Length: 192
Image (cartoon, rainbow, N blue to C red; front, side, top):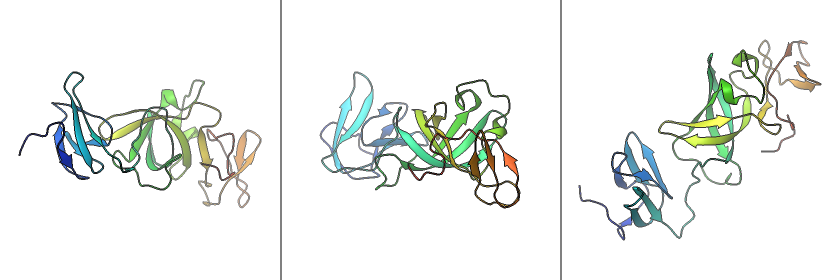
């Protein structure tokens, strides 16, 4: 494999380097220890900070960065973290997100106050809005601490009917079940 250097022309998916050599910059992503181009363009190697990027005049797929807001679906809830499948990046709803497509909300990042049981705040299937804290290899680190962050839509754990917001709790209009969640301030209002 020829060494990639500044000025080389690359296409989406082209191998750029390994994570042992560089960190991915703009228009580049890491998967299983290798860095690939996300768009067509010219390679830029910054040897000083060990970063490899692709300069593109074409608007490529959205890349997750700290501070970005995502919307996703809770896939699993464990004692210390909830796994979220990232569906969309706010402001870039027109494009699919490349890897990582999974995020993790650690119990310490779920709420602004102390959380004893994470499964009281999230359940599998909940649609959540979260902020990206960082991106590492397989998963993005997410937070729902904040008024506008949290569950946007939740279903009853008994009958799967969409829950209605009732003060500080969520109530099932079908079976009357009452559940708790870390809801966003605009629960079920349709805004990303």
